Amino acid sequence: MSLQKIKQTFDNLPSCTAWSLQLLNARAINGESAYNAHDITVTTSEAIIQFTEELAQTYTKEKGRLSKYQMVCDYDGSAIENRIYKIENSSELISESYSKLINAMDNADMKGNALEFSANAYVLRGNVLIDGTRVSISLFTIINPFKVLKHTLAYDGDSFKVLKDKYLMLRGYVDVAIIDDTAYLFNMNGEKLFNMERAYRAICSDRVEEIIVSGVVSDKDMFRQYATSGHNPRKFVAFDEKRLQKIENDGSFRKRMAEKFGIIQTSEGLFDSSDGSNVNRIVKFLCKKGMIDPVNDNPVEVEGARQWR
Image (cartoon, rainbow, N blue to C red; front, side, top):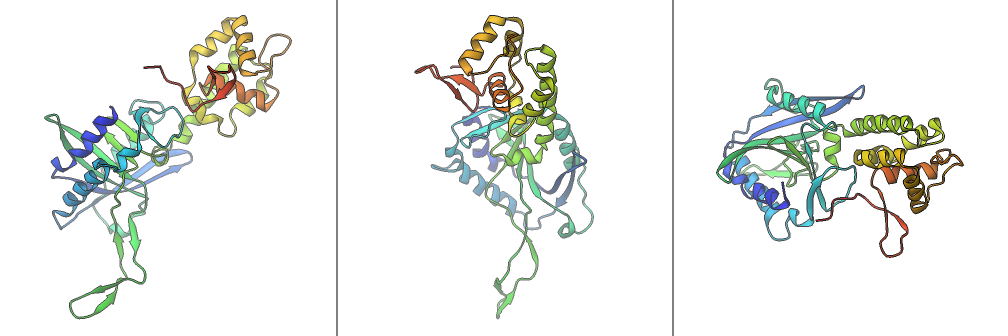
């Protein structure tokens, strides 16, 4: 979905007149994603419709929230503010969490006091009309929606009184949108919703072992230690299998890449993985975070590489 399609979706939020509002509790238990949802009944029938109309305007008006984004692109572990990242529900990054989240929302609790529900997010769910077709959409805001208004007085027709109660406040922004079966992350709060750190650390671990098995690094234990530490795990979301195969099967290519990217090689022609800085260069090369400046042929670090269009 392009940025224009995202705008079209928000433009058409008012086409839905039957929104549901749910409180969410998203958490990790022993590293595993867990979710609970609680349905909210709003007796003022037009309140949610008016809110979504205002939300649509907030995003689509001139210099609105969508204007700060330049593109929609596949999630690659980078965190560039002017991009909306999309992830299919089948992706290994979110598939397990996605399934649990949808199941929790489809089987939300309707009993008990909502004020006692430990919410750290809320979601608006509906079906929006786009190009004549009804499309399911879920809009997530990752924040505790309850607020106590301290030192706030309300007029009751005769005098002012202190508001002591806890209030549910809807915010004029969205952190994550699920449109059909695709998740769109407007910021990195989406990583929290899907517990993605666990996923990309698992991916990192698998890819590191794959690199070690390929035999291109000199010290297996040190490579494993350095490659899985710091910010490296999220880089492996963009791991390039073809680059690994090329340096594994072509010694002259491996030597050429080592020279271009400043990667030290051993006398046996392997990438030296005994040094943390050298391992970081290897990771950047294999995960498309390292490129060559076309002006001066110097290696540079980049957020990500995509096909030229």
